[in-house]
Amino acid sequence: MRRYQRYLLVMTGAVLFACSGTAGTTACAQMNEDRAVRPQERTDGPEEKGPGIGLKDKNTEKAEAKQENAGEQKNAGEQKNAGEQKLMGNIAAASETDSLILVVGQGGADISLSYHTKNEEGIWTEEFETMGRYGKNGATDDKKEGDKKTPLGTYRFTMAFGVKENPGSILPYHRLTDTDYWVDDPESSHYNRLVDSRSTKKDWKSAEHMAAMVPFYHYGLALDYNSDCVPGNGSAIFLHCMNGTADTGTSGCVKVPEEYMKKLVTSVDEDTRIVIVSDISRLEQENGR
Image 1 (cartoon, one colour):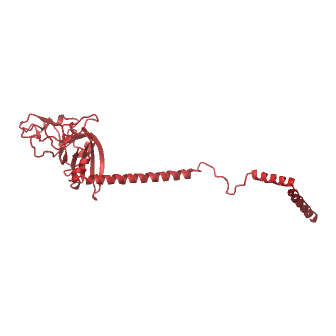
Image 2: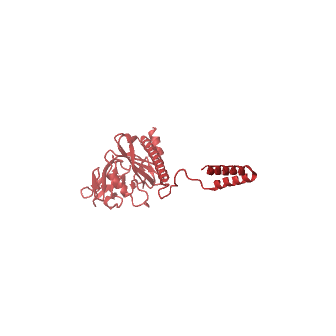
Image 3: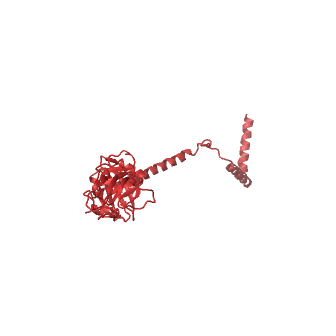
């Protein structure tokens, strides 16, 4: 045992002596380089591999993106709601009803029509919006028979009617027959009224044959415009169906696609208002009066 210990001491001294010289320094440096190029042992465990690695980060990114998108949608919804309340605040008739149809001219005979409802808390919601048409010559504050203009203003509905069966109207619904006429002759005692030619003595030279007006009168709502039937001030002002997107302007009525007309017939009641303006700026002007 003592002989083995003396051997170890001798070998250790030899190594120290070798490293103290120039050649030894080179040898030791080479040993250190060899140690440096060896792969270091991992102290953090084996490298994680497999199909699930990285999914956590991707899922986190998706969750963050979804949350950000939800926030943007919430902000957009709040802005839309604020805009809706402001819009209704500019319409005097909005304080008198909980359902309102807004018709806004878009140039020429083109219009946008939107339907709005108010809940018990007084908050307005736009139910839908669609394109449509009104008078071939636009709209006017001074409607006259035959001018092909739509009367501006705020109105109610007196009745619903149509060639088709009642879809579930809240207002009284008149199913049109072949003997139904709406008189537009200012000289007639029945001016601006619906008559049944079988029971009404004819004293008019012109009148709309209602049942023949298809597909326009598949569904319709009669406005209470010129309810006093003043001769020459305009007659037969309805909200009714249009015949495709290529449809042109009217003689004074407002028309929209049939699917929306059907919705309106089943939604409006005697308190519903329809507001017709040639430009959205007119709402602010009228509210400021």
